[in-house]
Image (tube, rainbow, N blue to C red; front, top):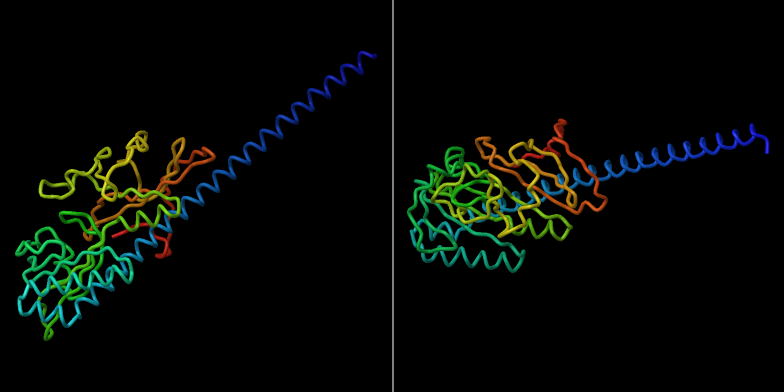
Length: 298
């Protein structure tokens, strides 16, 4: 065989291998880009979906608070200061709502001084001053308008408050309280796990959250116990207002929730399986002007 032909064949073979290598490499890059884009799209969708169901739950709580604030039986028993009758009436309505709408709610009624008049879950508790640490109650008394927010008291819940108005005068307020367990279950059915984390600096000795699981400098609100190792490589203090991150097995999206005075209380973090082991890490700072897509919860 001619030596030149042999050299040519070797050259062509090398060129073929090199071309194949570049094709495989480009395919690998394109696949990674595609996987990355798919994962980011999935995480952004989970952010918006979670934000939307939070808003739905808040609207539901607010509608119930307004409805009960206009309930004649409740108002009459309140004006008579018949706590026993109020307690029976409120729990009867809670029981009806649970049967009809599977609602897991609690109700608190306050007098015009913003002290506890009645709690649906404990008849013995009354006359506790609330105005010093319940911003929502003060705002409702001042504005005479209903209000809903994620508010921190002795617990952290969705709280909807509506004023009790009699003869154009503020006589008290009624509050619907919803915890995060229902939202957690709803997300889990969609293969998403949710972790509501409150900044540890807001914990005080009177709080009912003192025995909750601690994760880094945060308190887990919505679950009894989780494997905290899923956050072991994440500095929660460095998270932005909203964004996403990954580890080897899970992909996370998150957003911030604030107090009524715009204090940053903590984060809602949503996780899902990262089947393709795609790695992303973004502070997700881009401005979204459409209010339907703002990932900030009050």
